[in-house]
Structures are given as structure tokens and as C-alpha cells.
Amino acid sequence: MKIPELLAPAGDWSCLRTAVENGADAVYFGIKNMNMRDNAGNFEISELAGVMHYLHENNKKGYLTLNTIFYNSELEKLQKIMAEAKKSGVDAVICWDMAVLDMANRAGIPVHISTQASVSNFQAFKFYAKLGAKRIILARECSLSDISDIKRQSESEGLNCEIETFIHGAMCVSMSGRCFLSADTFHKSANRGQCIQPCRRLYRITDVEDEKNSYILGHDYVLSPKDLCSIEILPELIEAGIRSFKIEGRIRPPDYVKTTVACYRRAMSAIEAGDFTPVLAAELKEDLKRAYNRGFSQGFYKGLQKDWISEGPAARESKEYLGEAVNYYKKVCAAEFLIRSGSLNIGDKILIYGKTTPAQYTIIEEMQINHESVESVGKGERCGIKVPARVRPGDKLFLVKDGGN
Image (cartoon, rainbow, N blue to C red; front, side):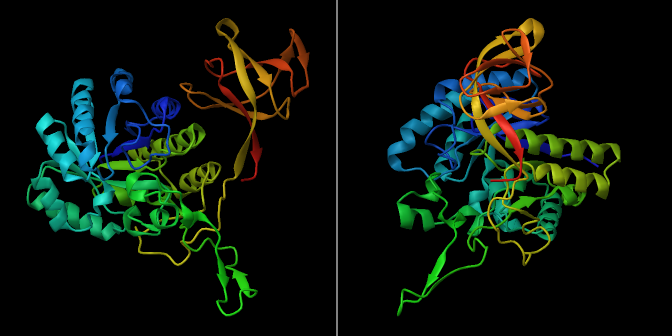
């Protein structure tokens, strides 16, 4: 059984490094103001060379998302980005705007067709493959049967084009995310990467003849689907012929990237070794529930499920900001932190990450103030803590708690 690529989101440097350190084969990332996750940290054009150098140095691939719609006034900037992408060794460009596809083809950069193109049948798949696409991210509405059929037909016609699908993360109630609710309500277009996500809110039904009569729709966020979670059906996805497994989440924090990438890497390694079992899948699903989520469903893979509407955030763990790193002492693998809020005690679970520092968890076994061991520290105090890996001044320190937001 050929194991697919594990593709992770990278909204900033911290997420990028976290994805690499936890087993991703490739990452996808965007340039500021030029992709479908405009609310993510994103990268500057000048950072492309550094991003690709880091990835290739670690034997990973990097895909640049230019997957929004573009206007005439932006074509010159697109040309500059494409030239820099070519120079920096970007492994592929993810797009669905024909201008971007044409520019990438001219530059000799492989093209991956975005899920925004809503490719859900073989005729569309073949059309984009003939235009030079090397991979197509199928519409999220495709079932396992749909995917298998497209793969079979692609092979029968000898098309040199891979299939990629999402395996985990946020789902949209609209067709593959092509929604106008945010644009209509807040003048922030989802199709320009600026979605305000009004679908994630609770709504009230009001009697137009008597506005005093209104009702909250139970506990359901009626426009907000549960997150996709495919951990239990990964072998079936592999059998369907998917080449790349994609995790959604470029606006989510490094700890989300760490948890999701590590869980799916473990599952895929177990499948490769022949050790994947329902017990392991259930265990990994529980681990995935610790990261931010809105509840889980299998999306459209087995046909639309009746229980796909979310009841809001459902993470098993939450984090509380405590302070920041002041110094790091390499010889003793310890860091000094300034506590700005709350308190910290022996036995607490903490999370650390920063602008370029990957997410790391640890349990506090000892803390020191002025080289003296202490049981707890509070606001305004500085303390020394052993850490699993290097931290940098300014890195954030969080207390990890049981229970979601």
C-alpha cells in the first residue's frame, strides 16, 4: 500500500517549523494578501527563499498558495511573486485562477488546482490535467466512490495528474468554501481570503409580526459544520488512490499543527507497518480532540451525515496565556520566564511557542527563582523551567487546562 504525502498548513514560521518537526512531508503556505487565508500570519515575498531553503534542507516540499481570485491591478504583483517562487525553488503553486495557472506554466512551476475550483467529476479533472495541472485537490463534496472513479478513469486514460484531498480541519456549509455570506454582511469576501465566518455564530429566529417572540436554535450553530476528521478511515482513503493527505488550518495556532500532524503521521506509519487498528484509531481521535475543533464528522466521504452540524468549539484542552521567555540557557536546557498573568505550579502542563519557535509541551517537574526551588510562581515573578527544546526571548508561555473554550 503506497502511503500518501502528509501535507500540513503553515500560517507562519512557528507553524512551519512545527509541521516539519512533527512529521509532515510537505507544507503549504501563503503570501500576505494573496491567498485564501488572509487572516493568517502569512509570509512576505522576501521570505520565500528562506522558507524553501529551510524546507529543502529538511527534505520537505513547499507549496505556495495563490488560490484566491485576482484582479487586473494585481497581475504585475503576481508576476513578481511567480518569478521569486521560481528562483526560490517552490515545489508547486496551488491556484484556480487561470491567470495564475498560465503564469506558473510559463515559469515552469508545477500547478496544483485548488479545491476552490470544485473539481468533482472526471471531465473537469481531465480538463485541468490537459492544461498542465500535476495535481488536483478535489472538491470536499466528493465521496470515496467519486474519488475512486476519478482515479480509475485517470489511470485508464494515462493522465499524469495526482489526487489530493483534505483529511482534517474546518468544513464550510457552502460549496467548497465559495460563499458570499461574509461579503454580503461585512463586506469581507471569503473568495478573497478575508472571511469573517458569520456561519460560526448562533442565530436567533424572530417573529416578524411580533419581534418580542424570538428563539435561539437550540445548541446548534446551524450554518457551521463539524470539523472533518478522517483518522478512522485512512486505509479506505489510501485505497481510493489519493496521493496527498491535506490538513486544513493555516489560521490555527502551532499547537493545533503539532497535534494534528503528529497524530496523522503516527496513523500513516502504522498503516505502512501493518499495525493500524481500530483501537489505535480511537486513541488518536481522542488525542485530536485535545486541539481546537468544532466536533468531528467524516464529511462527505461516506455520504452526507445527519449529525454534521456543529455545537460550537469542542476542544478537550484550552490554553491560558501566562507570560513570555526572557532568557534561554543552552547548557542546562532551561529558560527564564516572566509571568505576566495567572500562576504556575509544579505538575502543570505548559505550552511554549513563538514567532519562529515550534510548539512544545512539557510537564513542570521543577521551578526555580534565584536558583532556589519553588512550588509555584505568580504574576510579576521570574522563574527558571526546564524545557524540551530551545526557546527564544519573547516566546509565549501558556498553561494547558483540561476542558475546551
